[in-house]
Image 1 (cartoon, rainbow, N blue to C red):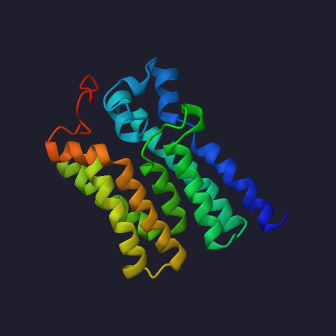
Image 2: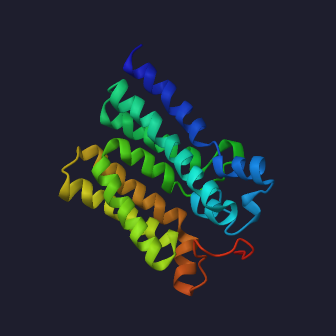
Amino acid sequence: MGDLLIFLICVPATYLIGGIPFGLIYGKVFKGIDIREMGSKNIGAANAFRALGPIGGVLTILLDASKGGFPVYFAKEYYHLIPIAVVFIALAAIAGHNWSIFLRFKGGKGISTLFGVTLVISPETAAIGFLIWLLLTVITKYSALGSIVGSFTLPLCAYFLLNLQFTYTVFFVLIFIFVIIKHKSNIKRLIEGTELKITDKVQKKIH
């Protein structure tokens, strides 16, 4: 099978895989709840942690990360596609999570899926970004703040510290822009002091 055909199959398939809302599924199957009606109403890991507890939150992180990690691994390490092809497949995974076809093109904010993608592209970059996210989230209790600053470190690490292939550095710059766009409401609430903390009870709603 030629590289072009593999690429043409992988991009839509990865988008569909990325669109699987694992946190939502876990909540409905095991808790009988819809996390879109709780907390921040987001399907991502932070709200899953609030609504579903530590086990549901951790499982959501792992499964959402795998949506990006596995397709990118097969593209990069198994099929040895060129970096630009890998980047498009990575973007497809994140786009699937953020704008899921199964949720009428709504979704999460892509941070866990981004982590899975980055872990394959550059484990060192992923480790630094994760540590920044973890540190800020533990100190401030604001997962959104950790996500924004952590994603900001990705292109910096890729370019200045690790000298990654330029295509991947551009990818991380684009991703940071996407993260800012998806977190516009979080940024506003952080400034206003109304942002949910990761430890807040799910009864607290954002309108």
